Length: 207
Ligand code: 5GP
Image (cartoon, rainbow, N blue to C red):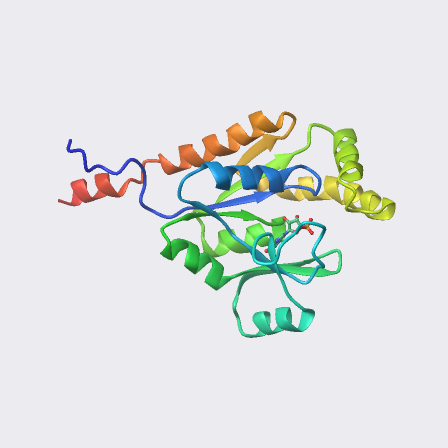
């Protein structure tokens, strides 16, 4: 063996992370992108208003309903969905740009989006983040103060239905201790990168 064997797969990977809201999924995704080399976050387009502290082009691309409709009409969306009256979607350019930079891409999207991504990219890795309990989920939703009482009730009711729909995901991370959950996410990424569909071995076999 020479020193030029790549340390892991050179094939680009897609990691799709979904969870009911308030599960801490966005913080987990941010931590992974900060700490895992060659991993980038897929920045979605949305018609929802920015929350306090959210920046255009960092957390989301905030667009008008008309702009979003135009993207869909021009077939620029790799996937999109409507949640609580707002549209969310990933453009094909976002994925393309990530690949061109040589990055694996992490998606923080819902189950419907995950289905669309896995149809287009069957090797996409799907990861479900669960709260340790529904009581804990309720507390988190209240504490983050971004939803009013009615919105918390709606999100909690939806959480159970959402989890049932996401039973097909490949990996499950329970976010009880953030540190442990973040470690699990990084481990999944590392394991998937080490899977044996290694270009080096393939080239050797075909030599
Ligand atoms: P929030 O409004 O709390 O940021 O996000 C609400 C939901 O929209 C979350 O479940 C999040 O994963 C999902 N979401 C965010 N961006 C996208 C996207 O581009 N596509 C899809 N399908 N869902 C998204």
